[in-house]
Image (tube, rainbow, N blue to C red; front, side, top):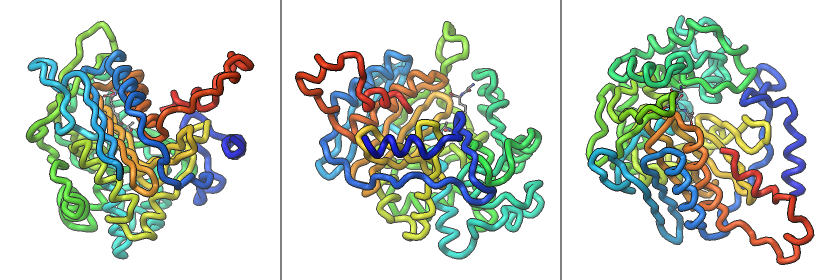
Amino acid sequence: MRRRLALSTTVLAVVAGVVPAATAHAAPSAPTPVVRAAQTAPDMEGVLAALRKTLTTGAPGAMVRVSGPDGVRTEALGVRDKVTGAAMDPQARFRIGSVTKTFSAVVLLQLVGEGRVSLDAPVVQYLPGLLPDERITVRHLLTHRSGLADYTNAMFANTVPGFEAVRNRVFSYQELVDLSLAEPRTGQPGVAYQYSNANFAVAGMLIEKVTGRPVAKAYERRIIKPLRLRNTFYVHPGTQIPGLHVRGYLHEDQSSLPLVDSTEQTLSWAQSAGAMISTTADLNTFMSGLVRGRILRPAMLDEMLTMTPVNAANTRFYGLGLRRYDLSCGLSVYGHTGTVQGFYTYAFATRDGKRTLSALANTSNRGSANTALGETLEPAFCGKPPVPAAGALRTAPEAPAPEASQRDEY
Ligand code: REX
């Protein structure tokens, strides 16, 4: 409790996900994370309740996989295909959206560790003329502090028409960067966190420039093979999800209209910012392997885990292509979230990598379903909430525990 009060006073100038830094180059540092292991068993009843809520708020199906030294637990509700009625299947592949950003950041940090890229070098040193501001560094891209506008806001201002306009399009990275640069920049380099897919489009371009090969090869050689992720793919610009997979269903902005099957698309609008396909098992292996140092040297993992706050409550942080959530039980978990048409994903691990969770709902453009899916994290990592002492309810019935009030913040 003392710790939480102390944290809430450290960051005062945080506004709606935009966090000003003290100077152009030094981002505010996050409070020390709690690195201990998850101490209580996962509360699978709580996880199931969150999945049920995900369905009642509009997802055709949802599933979760919680892995740890005491075993693997999976839960799946609803359908993975609305037409055939096939049940949601914990083995099925799906689109992981921005969890792809963690893969891209790992590849770039490996290249940094090999001395082929410098985190604090200007991007234009590697990609001459690409960006109009030579102060934008590689680190700014990976921390969302470049000020490059997120072109997807305009692209998907009208959700379904926007999606249909790009679902079969193949963009070059240059075209995506041009879309971003056609908009005003959101700030000076290094100053504020502002989530933008443009950052990870440039990151992909950088990977291709430095390695001389497509990003798919880098993911395969540097992450997928070493961690034996047999169900993880980057098929861009292919539109199909290979093999057994979940079908994705996109909500229209007008909620009376039927769901749109959004399974097949190039995902070219995202590429290295969001086009990968995986499974809950592979995502757990990936996040666990990452935090345990299996794919990054210690110094590079430290860079990735250097976090700055991104919400006013000071419970959400962003590192280099990696999020940190501080849960109500005081535990910090690391991973990423994903949203692409028809698919919401969460993939998180404790700092010691011993407990991991991946969750998927086959819908999107329905914030309440995404929030409900995120409510799997607390029970999975914190276990059952403490039962209040018998007298406690009589003395203070109107005051909710701080833990309870924080459970909605995903
Ligand atoms: C694109 C629009 C969302 C989705 C987006 N996705 O930027 C990236 C990602 C790749 O995964 N980001 C999330 C669409 C936020 C993350 O990091 O967790 N929304 C939808 C609309 C809204 O079209 N008009 O909900 O499917």
